[in-house]
Image 1 (cartoon, rainbow, N blue to C red):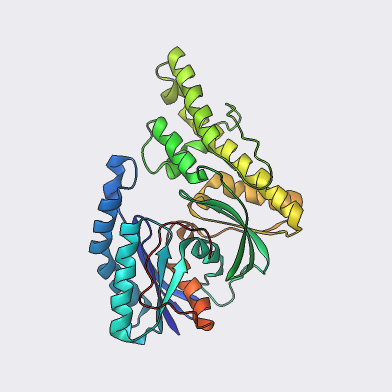
Image 2: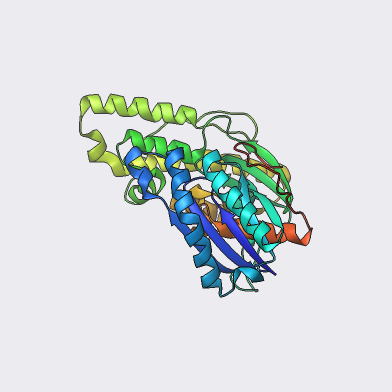
Length: 337
């Protein structure tokens, strides 16, 4: 069985080919056009997807060593995401699948991030057992998920306002460090003191969390320090980045510890773009030693938006013959089905 996966929810055009659950290729075209705007411009993103999708799919098939006629199905991101970007992938999939006479499989983008842990590059690669807890953190979403099965995911808690990745990007922008902020903050934080500065941590009951107060605290603190030293950011950017990262990771891990305590599940995974952050990865390793967790951290190439995670989700849905009719539209907002 060969599955083609297509991902186009934001600003990365990606295609992957799997032979059953073994990844053969994973090709991604990123969009540099957004850097000068300090964020993703939806109209520019959809235009870039139109330019990239055919070459990316062709490259994925070529690297996998198969022809399009050998495909068994096409899995695609139906949502959530930017509507213009999604429409490019959805429209391409409908035409491509219909021309080949093969089924389409629609995939929830968030489900795909969780299922990235089931991508195999070799048959002996290990995967998490069900149930497990997954901390899903990205630029647009932050959720705590109990994964009972590939198609049974229960949201235990989520942000009530901003996502963790969004908070990092906004704080990076306030510091004038550029976009995307995640990799920049991560790089600077490795050279700074995580305890140099204190920022407000919200007290949200249960397993929900919040990051808007942190952003406000960070902004007001910077304004005060800049009044005394106009070059404060330049003089202290490493410590600022490290302290910001430490605060966000602390917020996430406190809630994760509570989720593990409440459920008794000690198999714990992390997924989404923020899972590439070294501070968060180190916190997972520390908690594994301290609390006896069995942790699952994805390869860096599977943390950001990629088609491999869409393809592996499509593989499991294919086994259940859970196909998508051609009349189903893209959707921009939802959590899990």
